[in-house]
Length: 152
Picture 1: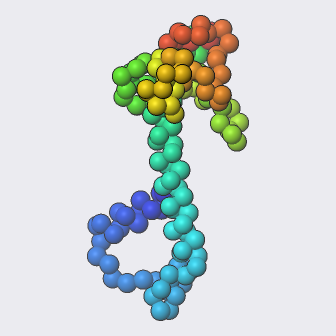
Picture 2: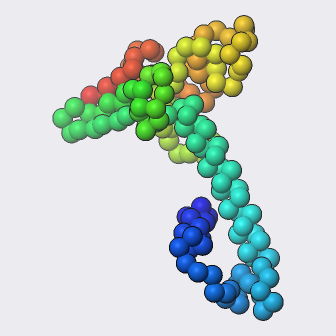
Picture 3: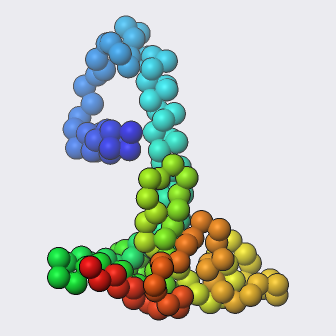
């Protein structure tokens, strides 16, 4: 739906409006049909989901990753991994998301309060987001290593 919305914005910006096509989305009176109203509602939900996804990407940026037939897999974190610039590096973790078949590698902040907690809350354990219940460590990777290698 967001792709359709982007096309719509493109056409509204770059072309002169000349009218509406009567049919699936507009009636003979030029008014939106119930189907168009439903599509617009889905676009709003898509925008909300996109905002949530971007917020999650700030909290858990994707790891850098590489694979080769001779060396196997390697995941690592940097201050710009996943295209997300930040002032911390983090450590690779598996992020399990409901409905996803496989976890994905994300970089997790290791110090300070959890992201969903106020910084001045004295009860945090200075472990950043490491205790998030949706995270798992990589077997064979030291818990605070910024790089995890998995040879073949």
